Image 1 (cartoon, rainbow, N blue to C red):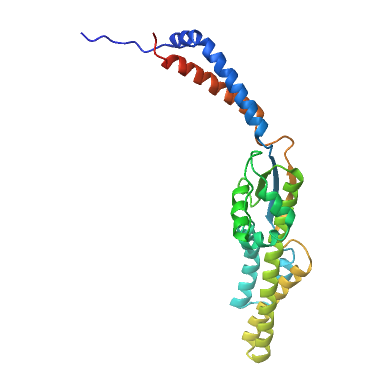
Image 2: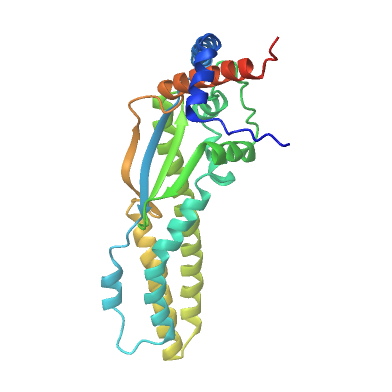
Length: 277
């Protein structure tokens, strides 16, 4: 005849915990000790965040007003490309912010190299080996996060660091270098294109061709005019970098509660699984 075993109820569980109360308390104490040891060797990290967004091109409407009536395909191209340039430059900014090109410039700064090398979570964490732009880029990919802000074009850039001052410094430095690299490359391209279009204008007599070349030349001059204003080109800082008031890691309350609970569970489990004599 088969004997059916009833499933344990909540009352049975409470009784089991009560019978193992000594082991549960001892486990909780060991958990508390482990939490204190963990917190003593953990290096507090603060979260530094800033908001960036696409830079605006204010003179677009004025340039469009200067175009002649019934513009050709090239003139229409000028108007459309000027409208889409903002987002493409910002996408480039977002994807090169932690790339090797920016890392190569940051690597020249001894403060950044030292700060990123000694940013481990524990006092015994080994220092990072940063001997190349790619090594620094890989470290930035792990340390810096870029997240969208809702459905807006804004991006939240954040990094967890042990030094508040260093966190503010590296985000500002990375932003400046990224925008400067994009600006320099765009400026060089615009200069080369303008020189080529000027040369073509001197060799072309067809009125329609000259009108198209003139429109394209105006586009390059417009870009050079913006670059000459010495303002942010690809991205603007919508909100300056700021530091969390309290350490972002480790969270003392969560660590203490988690370790104590784990110790209590372990103490109860050892008592229940211990063979009875």
